[in-house]
Amino acid sequence: GMPRGVEAYIEEIMKHTTDMMGRMKSIYVLIRTLGTSGRQEVAVEKAFHFLGLLGEDFPDDVSLTDIQSALASTKTKLAKYSHDQILTSLPRLTDEKKHWAMVILAVFLPYVYTVCPNYIPLIACIMVDTSLASGLCRESASGFFHVGVVSIGYFGEVEYGYQLSKLSLSILQLFNARSLYPKMKCLMNGYVSFWVEPLQSTAMSLAESYEEALMVGDVEYAMIGSTVSCM
Image: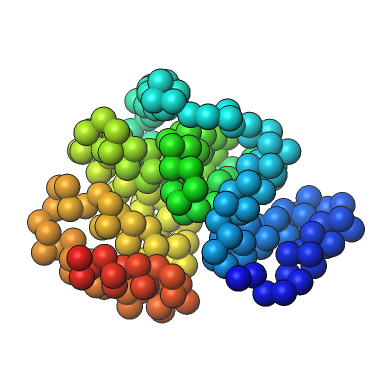
């Protein structure tokens, strides 16, 4: 579980910090610590609360109609850009409030898979919509990847989802986000690549992601990559 007193300590910091940057860093640590200590439901609950304070509100429940509507809207916006234009023409996200919303959305996504997976499509669409409207950040990669996964999983659009997942890797390269690259590579090969690429290639890439993740200190995704490559 969470180390004794850590949650109370973080919340005490937030009470006495008026600077947005300081508060958001504390919130990030709190959500990450809750999630990695097995308290995913609490992590998701707190993340939704803080996202609401940042202007990102979510419905109490998500229906298939909500998912179809959100994805159709996002795909319409994406259709205005080629992938090269997304990488070269979009500005960088400079709005601090929106950026921290993107950070929280990205960090709690793995816990949403466990607690309330029907929210994944809405979260992914919000991340892509924010990126197109306000600019790219390294967390944008997670949004594009998950819109790709949703397109495959819900609607069978394999090639579309595959190309979006490849774009997510390009976004991380654009920001030189080396610490996140092995994680995204692991996710792509575990969820997407095998639909298009030879299984041997996917398995080999997953095995490589084990070493790559360890090199950047990402033990969690080193283990995930190693486990999935054996399945």
